[in-house]
Length: 394
Image (tube, rainbow, N blue to C red):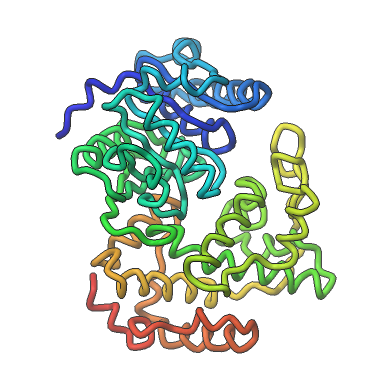
């Protein structure tokens, strides 16, 4: 087990939805000091209130780590507008800014000069190349991917991704990640040695985002209320995909699809509805309106009980299985069990291989029909799925 006793001060750059939740678990992990940095005092103050409220709820349920109270943990939190001051003594820095490569590259160039030479520089990117993010940094060996999943205090998975990262950096990042508590059980850190757009979990799930975006366009064309799509999913998730997109931010969802459009295929381009909502500034929970409507305290105003009757669960699972098989073909992972375990830890839902072993032939036909209707040929079954040979890769 690697020694991380020297990691005493954590800095989180970005106090949006992801940054504040990472800050919350960093406080719960018991580090001596946690600095949260943003360019807006309003965002920082809102994030502090959110963290205080979240920790209080956890404390009331008796689930804070022993000997900790909300008041004690909040004393360890520092809000910073000045990046230089915030990272000057930081041992471990986690970036949680928007998914724009140029922004991240610029930040990591600064962090390389402003932080101590021993500092680990982690990016919470959900999709991007760690090597490219570190391109302008003067110490790429200290840069590592550390991808969390929302809600961070609840879901167990962190993907630890290697770029030009040293072995020591990887080991420290894994040890720090394992120290962050999770209310669902033991934190699971999956080590990813080979870069791939979206890594494991988002790579498997992103084709379903293309499908949801396509369904939103279909619903609009047919005059069906958009939020009715979530009612089609009611038996699968506590929060449907439309509400979840709103929760994360539609601008983030669109940036992610655009990244996959550039790196994998034009077939990942965001649909008309998503582009329209983002252009109008209706970004979801943070603006009060997106696909759904939200209260000021961030709760859904209503859940639709009327189904859109557009969603096909077999196609939804087929899209996941096909992309997961591509990961196996590319050698990003060697075992389908690794993929299923990662998805379970990330979203608390089963991965595609269990039902896929029984249904892959039927699902191949679903993909072919979807491609014919949508024109998105990227989603034709890959060789490993079509032949069923993935079954031998447990």
